[in-house]
Amino acid sequence: MRINNKEHLKLAWRVHSLLPDFTVEDTWLLPMTLKANESIQEVQLVFAQAMHETATRGMAGLLFKFRFFLGRVFGWEDPVSPVSALPEGSIRARYAEQESLQAKDFTSNGFGGFVPVYHLEMEILLEIENKTVLAACHLGKVQLGPNDFGVHMTIYVKPKGRFGKFYMQLIKPFRLFIVYPALLKMVGKQWKRYKS
Image (tube, rainbow, N blue to C red; front, side, top):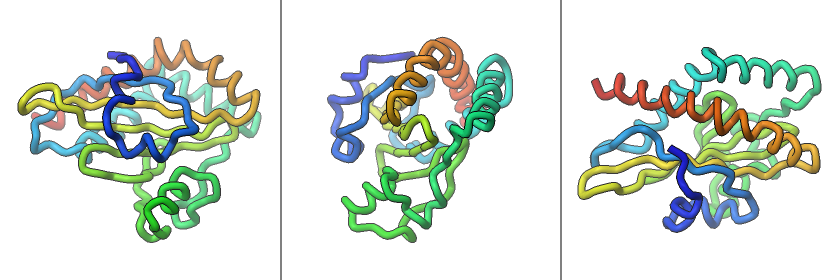
């Protein structure tokens, strides 16, 4: 379910001070309920599996394949350098500077083009970059009841130039009405499998 970005912004996430110059594009409530002892790291494992499944099947999978095809043809793919490099301008480099970290302090276990920035107790931040945009996916554990928690998935974007802004507007309907609904449905399925 898509929720108002203000629901994300009003919570005290670490990401707020890290990405003040990024736009919050979307916030979604993932179709899962966690207990207090279930970690956001478990959510990331399920999320990674759901991303892979979504990118390889159905209409959303076709859109992913078409996007990667266009990226190869027009040279849009400019993936973030290996994690050990902490490339200039990356979100990881920004975080490393704020937290006085070095490249060895970061994990390289990413998925689907996403590279981890940080794993905290209640939130995870992943980044992805190409020639059109520098973006981040934030997963945050939010309290729903006395012992029940949900997860917000929030997308941060920083388009690169006019073409990046045009591209983000061009793909918006596909993201909102095809990709994200398929991803959320798959997240729900994968979470049920994980819990069973």
